[in-house]
Length: 146
Image (cartoon, rainbow, N blue to C red; front, top):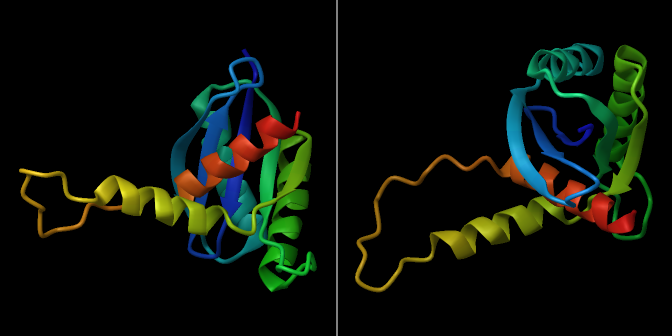
C-alpha cells in the first residue's frame, strides 16, 4: 500500500512522518539530521525514503506561514526544499500550512509528561522527537483535507 510522507523541514533536524490515505493514520517516523544545505538535505531525506523500501505516493512539506498568511524566511526555505526533493525523487510534493505544528507537538509532549499520582517523576528528561511529531501533525492535517 502506497504511503504518504510528511516533512517538518528545519535547518538542524528534519522530521518525517508516515501514513496512508485509506486508514487516515499518521505516525511520527524518523528524524534526519539537517546540514542547513537544501540540496544536501533533500538528498539525505530521499536516501532515507529510498532505503525504507516503502512505496511513496505523495510527499507533504509543511510551510510555517506567518500569522498573516505570508511566507517568511523559513517557509521559503521549506518551499525550496520541497521543490528540490520533488526533482530528486520524481514524487509529487504538496505543501500545507503548518504554522502551529511545532507548538502543538510541544503541547502534546507536555500533557504526556505530567506526573501521574503515585509515580515518581524521573529527573532526566526523555529525548523528544518533536520534529517527527510535528511532521505527524502536518500529515494529520493533510489527510483530513482530502
